[in-house]
Structure formats: structure tokens, C-alpha cells
Length: 256
Ligand code: PGA
Image 1 (cartoon, rainbow, N blue to C red):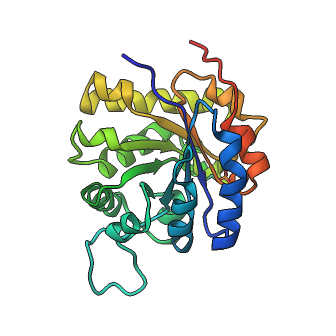
Image 2 (spheres, protein in one colour):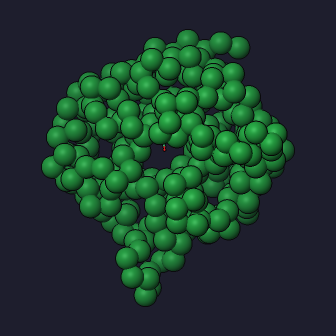
């Protein structure tokens, strides 16, 4: 079986105007043209259209950071997957820990959003991860199992082709407390075993599992050399093209 692709995603969160987004992409595109990694940028809703237009014909794919689980309706302030697709998005991040914590998203809501996103023609990056407290209580694997199985309930092996899983330990996000490669690898291996249990070997082998949480150019190589870490979801360090490009162009030598 072909090896899994390397996928690096920038998650801009609530940063960048349209102009800032387009300037960023103009700078980044030539720098990543020969990269072996796939490059994804999850930009604010308002910048999707302009970002997608400027990224056309480059290695960069544009996506969103959230969506509603309905096709359309009386949901003031919400955005539908088909609107994201219409604006040029290829993918959407679902279930980021900030959405889970600050906007009270449950695994059940996340599951509905994932299903809707696929119906609307969007790929998804589905985030899971334990809090510091849960890790301290020795509950990391239990939390990952619950989040993964519930967020992806009733998703077929075929649909799994459109899903990237992002393991993001909540304690590592925006804290500069990156998980060690060993801690991250152990969680990734556990998630891959869950994929094996639920969907079988082919899905387990081909599904990309990204690590996220205080990824920087200096810790990217040791994370990416782990056998089950297939990419990175980068927040703060994706806001500057000069820094992000170093992560995208990391030379990866996999260890077994
Ligand atoms: P960080 O964010 O890289 O700033 O820790 C990662 C994320 O929230 O996806």
C-alpha cells in the first residue's frame, strides 16, 4: 500500500483580513511549490473566497474552521457547508477543542457536522484530544476512544477517505508545551488502532492523523519522524509565511 501523504494544515483561527490573507498566500505559494507536503489553510469565513481564488493553481488548498450541521435555515449568525463550498473551500475543520470548550460542541454535534460537510462536498479535519486534567487522571485513551468513535459514528469506510484526524492535546494548544514525540506517537498509535478496530486495516493504514499543539519549526522534524504522525495542524506558527514555510518544508526521515 502506498504510504500516507504528509499533510500540513495552518489554522488561522480569528486572525487575518482579506488583504492579509491574500498577501500571505502570494508569499507562501512559490515557497511551497516543490514541497512534498500537501498544504492546507483554514482561514476565516470572510477570506475564503479571495484566498481560494489566489490559491488556484498552487499547492495550497483553502478551507474553513467550522460550519453548521444544517443545509440552510433560520440560524442567525451561522454558516452552511454549501456556502463554504460555494466560496471555494475544499475542507473544514470540525470539533476543534476551542469549539468544544467555548461553544459547547459535543461529539454528537460534531458527528452531525461531519456528515453534513461530506454531503456538501467538503473534506473534514476532525479534532480530538484530552485535557490536562484527563491526562493527569490517566484517562487519555478513554477520552480519545469516546471522542473518535462518537464524532465519527456511522461514517463509512468510503467516507473515511475524506477525513483527516487531528490529535490535539488541549494542554498543548497555544501553551508552548508541545507534546513530546513519544507522547504524541503513543496517542497516534492508539488512534490508529481504534481505526483498525472500527473500520479495518485499509482505513487504519490510509487515514492521515495530524498532530496539533504548539508546533514550531524546531519541533516539527522530531514529531514528523514518528511512524504514525502524518502531518501537523499548526495554529500560532501558521500566521507568518516565513515561519509556516519552514514547517511545511520540514525534511522528514521516518523512524520505525
Ligand atoms: P497552536 O494551535 O499551534 O497555536 O498551539 C494549534 C491549534 O489550535 O490547532
